Structures are given as structure tokens and as C-alpha cells.
Image (tube, rainbow, N blue to C red; front, side):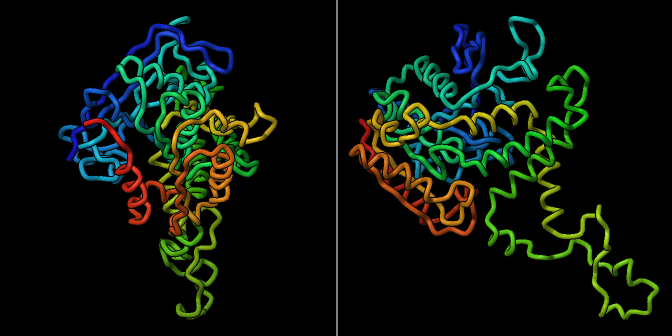
Length: 389
């Protein structure tokens, strides 16, 4: 088992951001696995999705339950083999897991950033990651990879730094969000900002946490990560607590004939309700509300074709990397047709592209799970990436 050791690097020089702001004196939390070879040619950058972080694989010393979020993908003998590759996981700016974010102190004011933290974009994250690689002495990447929002970063790397990326692995993603996806994000954000404990994003000063809003935001998001088939198979219409309905009590109706519902508008009766509330409760205990707003907005803004009149082929003309694209048939939030849009645009530019469309039942979350065909496709691709000994 890999032992993960998080590290922190501080950057004093200001980072110009797409919003026009500049972030100075910031920190990036990261971890590495494997060994960088003498030619520094075997580095793989792993970009994380919405609620993940730099901890991509292994466990922390003495913490058996601290397994990295992509441990099934990364490690000795795994698809991204750390006996061959030097893997770097970076926590993005604006996060709440170690890199500078809304919970940290603004060096210009001496106060916690809160809602004043600059709006971040995928492009800003990539620029910050590039600075970290510069500091580590890594000029080029054997591969950059990620799933979902992490895959958007991988795609953006191939466009922002085409000379530094040899391979881009883009999993369960899209060239931009549909209006439906933006709508889901906005409903989740409204749940947070309308929580009385939000205080305009400066809730730290009030000693509160907008947990109600965070719970609802997570519940909304979690519904979109699962497929209908998985939810039906896992929960169906199972009741959490099968009791006689209040409506039938004392009416003379035999128990076998009575519907086992409480007929309550507020009680948790169905298993799916219990599951969603559990997920929401967990999320509200560890995730920062301002971070959620920042990251979902970065998702909304990502659109490399916007500067090219919506023409994705023209937008991707800058890419020089080879690509592996992976999608999942039941992922309705980032449907396979969105990945195929990227594939077509890359082929229009005569880029080398491998595409795997996995018939998996798990919905968007499939990119995190143990599907043998999916992991085999990634393994085969990385085996064909040449690195110096």
C-alpha cells in the first residue's frame, strides 16, 4: 500500500486570473507517488473533480481509512503504474483541503477571504499547476489526466500548454456544460446562499456554517452522479421503516391490507431519502460553502470554443498531445455524445485519439469505480506511453 505524504508549496508572485484579479502569497497542497526519472520524462499530473483533492492514492501514515479517491487507478501495478510513472496530485486554488481558498487569510486585508476570494476558472487552475511543475523542475508531462471537472483541466492543459503535454486522458467529461447542467449547479448554489447561516459568504465571522444549504446542494449533485438504473437497483421503492400508516390505525383495516406508509410530508420513509440525507450530512461536515460556489461556477464558465465562435475544432487546433477519451453509457450528466464532440474536433485536427465508450450502469460516478473494461483501457493506454528508463 502506498503511503501518502502531503506537501505544501508557497508562491509569493501574484497569479493573474481571468477575472482580472491577481492572487498573491498563495499555497498549493500536493502529493507525489513514484520516482521522477533522470530525464524528468515520466511525470503524470492528476487533476481532481469537484469535491476531491490532492490525495489521489494510498493512505496516510497510521490512517487506514484515508484511502485516496483514485486508489483503484494509481499505484504499483495499477493502470497508472507508479513503478513507471511519477504521479502528482494537486489541490486546486479555492478548495478547502489545504490550498489557498476562502477559509484562508487575505494578505492584503488581514481578514479571511470568505466571499471575497477571487472567482477561479479551469484556466486559472491550470496556470497554478504549471507554476508548481516549474518549481518541481518538470518541463513536460508524460500525461495529464482527470475525470469530470478534472478532465476539463486535462483538456485545458493540452490547449494552454500544448508543448508541455504528450498525452491527455479525458474521462467522463464535456467541452462545456449544457444549460441543464448549469441549471443543476445554480439550484445547488441557491440552496447555499439562501441559507440563513450563509451571511453573504462571510459566515466564518459569525461562527456559523450554512449546513442546511450544503446538505441540499450535495443531495442535488448526488442525484445527477447516479444513473436511474443504479438508484432503482440499490434502493427501488424500499421503505426505511415499514410501519402501519397512521391513516389505517384504528380503522379496522387488517395489517396485511394497510399501506406501510406514515403518510408524512417530513419523515424519512424511503431508503433513497435516507441515503441522500446521509450523503448531505457527511458533506456538510467537511466541505466549505464558498468553495462549492467557486468550483461549480468554474464548471459553468469552462468553454474553450467560446473564443472561436463556438467552433470546437478551431479551439482544439492548438493541441499537440495524443488523447484517450473515455465515456460511460449511463452518464447522463456528461453523456457520451459530449465526449464524441471532442473526439470529432480532435480528429478534424488530425490528432491521435483513442476512444472508449464503456457500457457501465453506474452513471457519472463510473469514472471512480472498478469497471474492468474501463481500467483495462486506461492500463493499455499508459503501457504504450514511452518514458525513458
